[in-house]
Amino acid sequence: MLKLLLMGYLLLLPCCWANADQIPDDSKTPYNMMSKLATLAGSWSVERLYTEDAGRSWSPYAKAQVHVKYQSKKLMLEELALEPDGKFFNMRTFISYDQYQQVFRQAAMEDRWGIMDISEGKIVGDILVFSNTQSKTYYPMEGGRLRALKVRMELKSPQRFVYIDESYDDGKTWAPTFKMHYRLLQQ
Image (cartoon, rainbow, N blue to C red; front, top):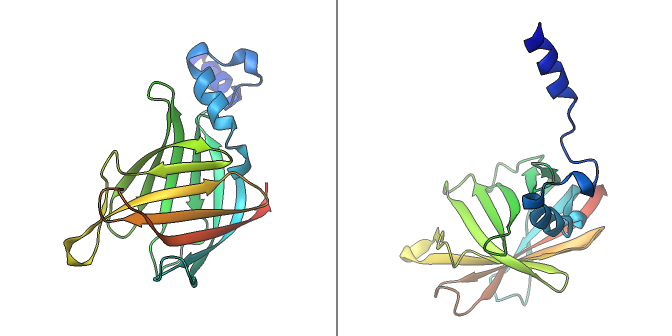
């Protein structure tokens, strides 16, 4: 009976802290940093575009609906495609803040190469900038080349862009490769 009462009590506990006074000291910095990404949360329509001429022209690649939501007591954001596009690859991403290294970290898992890409970054102005040059979780491309990625994510709503640049020289030079236009459907 005591076990049943304890289980019931645990189910009533909130998933997040009710107010800032309840946040443990060792969670305050990541909580505050992750709150800077609040404009990313919600349901979005995403149009993916690609370029083959260094960004002079863009072609449609795929469309999707994604949902971005806070997890783990608002210490992490998760983005998940609601309608995976079977023709191409889909990604599931997680973003958190590492208070000890003072960087945002993104783990992106895709369903083509099976790589968990790990990127680190910082907020520059109103853009969150990530790259995977620290982790070297590069993507294998034709001819044995390895592609590093830099992601520039606008922290805007109700419309925003995410720009993805590629590098084949360990991040010494970058060229545009993808951009994604996000349109907010529901906060």
